[in-house]
Length: 540
Image (cartoon, rainbow, N blue to C red):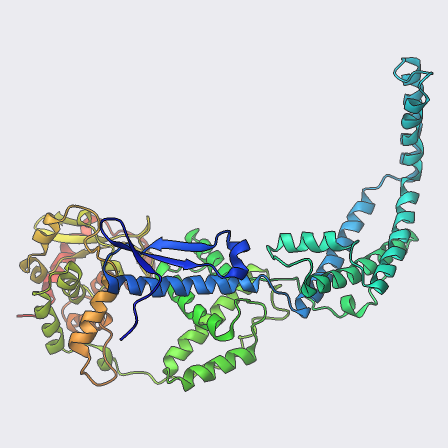
């Protein structure tokens, strides 16, 4: 028996359980607090335990991502130094193009000298105030000698930095290291070995930069780095991108309608799978993933007796996320291409559809048992699934306001938008089969006070658990999925009864025909209801 979580404590008169846990000491400064807490939303110990396990796993992944941002490999430092060299060299070229020519500087100097004479005559610079006159006149030679001063400064700085490199001194480059760390939200102790190594690499970059600038001062713009740290650095921009960053960015793009749109449930699935990979490899960094590493993960998953299909799905998810990362970085994250493009996925055998479809007897057993259930999700979702072939996540979003009548027929709306979604990103209106009306579903809706019809915590998972434990546990493998098995059965029963077009619309299957871009008004609803009445009753 599992021990109760020591992190759950009741609060308030209702005894709501709260999750409390100390932040790891090495991350307190980054997180900004010593302890985290959140309400589980329930006083039920079992439900709170499930919530706690999920939340603690999320916090662990977050801590791993934060730690990934607080450490730098030697390759990271080389990439950072090379990027600093390239960016500063490009900036130098821009600065040089904006420097006034010699004739422009001479003209500006003459104007400055003329202005000094005018200010003397106007009394702004008094004859008995030699200090004010000296300060004003200092601007005059500065205009003439600015470029020469810059050239001299670069040579002096180059000499000093070469001495610092020999003495392992970093005072003159620490400002660049601090700016780099701040830009990438990395925290390193200035006294740490890692910080000194970063300064050392940036010092090499600064010296190479000054050498190019000195060459340019004499008109040579063709120089290239000779220091191996810069010359042989990875040909890519520095990146400490995490998987969380990539998935978050892709979800935002999807919400804005960019690229292939995916539902929130799909992104949750991706986060779960990627979380398993991150835990396995003990790193949340995206840019360090290799094909060899993915091969090892594949072998470990198969050795853990996970099915080839499951392993294939997980590796496909990983490859997709790396593809997102490469596109989000404009192809700069990986030097050539997605490292998993050539990854071989486990072969899977096509399963016989009958193995994942409910038999009529099993479906009747579940529907009859649902009549005795007190929880609304167990009572009504099996019936709605059986007589629509809908996905359970779509039905979970139904509200009382979604049920409506047209003539003598009743329907419910499966909506999109405002936090609701479907796999195809399209809304639809589904006729309510007479068998569901005979069961008293409309009375249940009318007695509902508003809002969603199925509001219990973890209602969807609880429904799956109930069906799996009560009706599928003794069945031989492979078994139907608790909810999706009804979708397969609907397809079998609707054959020779419902038109293919009507069946596709009711079940929410994706169509890409031109006529699907038109219509779908209330005018089609009576015929759609007529089609639904042809669907046979599962429970006679």
